[in-house]
Each structure stands twice: as C-alpha cells, then as structure tokens.
Figure 1 (tube, rainbow, N blue to C red):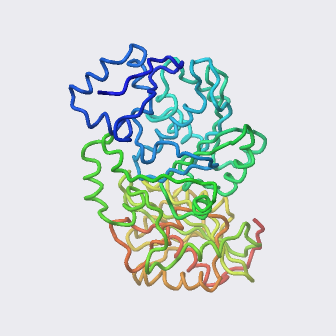
Figure 2 (figure 1 turned 180 degrees about the horizontal axis):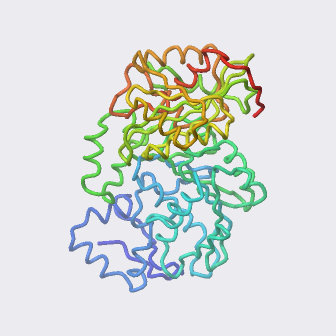
Figure 3 (figure 1 turned 120 degrees about the vertical axis):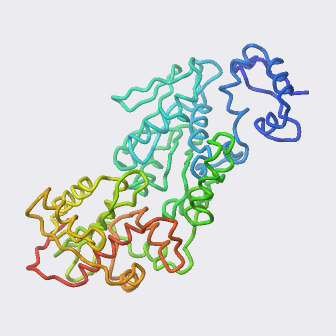
Length: 462
C-alpha cells in the first residue's frame, strides 16, 4: 500500500511523513507503480495533498543529485551535464529555504543571493526560466520579480537579490544567509565574485551556498571542490532522461560519442589535463597575473568564421600585448559564435580602438580578402595585416606552447573557454569537438608579437 499523506496537518500540504518502501526516492517509487496503482495513490490523497502534489519537489526530485546532502556544509556543488536538472534543483532549494508552512509564515532563510554569469542569465534561467524559481512556485507562494531593483520578494518578506559575476564589486555591502550560484565555471570574474560572495554570507547560524554548474577546468571550481566544507553531488544528462526530449540523448551520442566534450558537457565530468595536450591547467595557472606591465605593442588577432548561425564555427578574436622587457600578455578573449561576418568584424575593430592596438591580424587562407574588406568597411584607417597558414594547426601551435613553458607568455586574468580549448588541444584531439578557433586566434596573436617591435614603440599602461 502507498504511504499515507499527512493531509497538510503540519501546515505544509502535500508533504509525506513516511518514506517509500525500500528506501527509494518518491520519484523512483512512483515510477515503479503500475498506472492503476499510481491512480489509486493520487485518489487516496486528501484534496489539499492532491492539489499540492505538483509543487512538492520531495516527491519528484532525483535522489542522487537533487536532494540536499545531510550534515553541516557551507557549499553544496551539483556537477551535472546539460539538462541534468541542476537549475530545477537550485530553484527548489531556494524555495525550501524561504517558504514557511503557510504563504505568510517565515521560512528558515530570508536573504538569498542569486549569482549567474550575467544579469540576463539570472533573470532568464534562475528566476523566469521554465525550471526557475517563479515557474516552480505554486501560485499562492510565487514571489514577485521587481526588475528595477533586481529583486525577488515573497509574501512572507523573504528576498533574493540578483547579481552578475561580471560585476563582483556589487557584492560589497549586502549580506545574506544563503546563495544560489549558477554555472560558476563560466563566471567571467569568478575568483573575485566568489571571494566577495563569501564575505556576504554572514547572516544566521550557518549560511550556505549551492553551486549548480557544468564542470570546466577552472582554478576556482577546483579550489571549491577541494574545500573541506564542500559537498558534491554529480549527475550525467541521462539521469534526467524522463524530463528531456525522447531523441535528445541519442542525437548527442551520435554527434559527440565518447569525446571529451561529451564527457564534460553531458557526463558532467571534471576533466583533468588531456594526455598529449600542448598546455596544462598547472602551466596556465603558473603564468597567470593580475595586471599587465606597460606594453609597447598590442594586436587583435582574428581567426574568421566563414559561416554564421547557431551551428557555425566561432570567430576567434584574441587581444595580446608585448612588454619590451617581460614577454607577451594575453589581454582578452572576445571570441563570438554564430555572428554574421560584419558583426564579428565590428567586434574586432571595436577591440582595436578599445585596446589602442597597433594592428589587426587575420588568417586569410579560407576567407581571402573578405576580412580586410569587412574591416575597411567599418573603419578604413585601421592598420590591418593578413596572415597565411603554411603549416597545420598543431605545427603552428607547438612553438607557442613552448613559449608558455619558458615563461614568455602570460594571461592577465582568466579566460575559461580559451583555456579549456588550450588544455584539450593536442595530437589526440577529436575533430568532432569543433574547430579550435580561440586557440587559432591566440596563436596568430602571439606569433605576430614574437616577431618583435616593427614600429616605433608606444608605451601604454593598462
């Protein structure tokens, strides 16, 4: 017989006082029933419990990675593949913290930080998305989104503030008793954002943070996973297959197979250094600095995309500069995916002016004179040079990797997507993982600067 509902007597309709037989989750137990048994279970519920069933995540959650871990912890990290149910877990965790037994009753927490890669991501995914907080909340407990204040407010007075990881300074001043951080491995200024957030988590007896992310080789994520007060749950995309389009997993298997991309983006694995890759995480971390010294030459390198649209290769755009006494500094990765040719050309020209660069250099093997024509259309006076590849990608990249090993190239800050690509680039690289456009642009930038100062130096302090 199905366990009986408590019929809302504790003030929270739809919760169950007993656990399913066999120690399984409610979701797996319900799935094991026949259709008639499930129908009988629902018909046996009180009206309150039946109405609340849809909104009771304890019934539907996946026990392996969506259930909060027991014990005392400061950070809970859900490492999962795309579509594994990370966002839903985050939204429901926030709900469980701030909601009380009735819509006006206080919950366990009342001040929550919502941090994402950008404000748009916080709003469109964490708050308003199909698995976001508002969509997961029953009508009588659905919080109000006050866009002008970037604030969620519940009827019981609890509040959640939205923050962008691109603006860590905004986390100076506020204080919270909980935080939900989405896609931390993609944060543009992750270390600074996480540090400031940690200083904000100072309310209540035991403030906690939930991190939901697809893993990537970033120093911040590695440090977080190694912390003693961090607990981790993991799940591949297929763990949530019941809630995904029927042919999605088959299509992904056909497309990516057993590639490192599939292991990371679908399997939720945190990949370590790839055997045979020209760069390693440790090497890049060693060559990281906070600020560049005065530079005598700056270039914007472009590895053009010959097509546009969602399935097109990226247009690699990397900015780097030369210090006369101290080597080369990578300043920015402005790579754009799917943009029309005129749009990525405009991005390169904008970078030229923003960084007061000396030259735009672009690979012309496939694009011929197209890149220069686009650049001249936007700004006829930009200094431009086309470069031709006479060797393969690997042969061109090897001397650049050696320059890193000799300490001649440094990164000003972190460039997660570029560095992921670098640490996967080598002889064993699977071509199905896409074109290494960021690495190509990097190679062109560093190669150009290694030729030395060819004009009268202009010293620039960034």
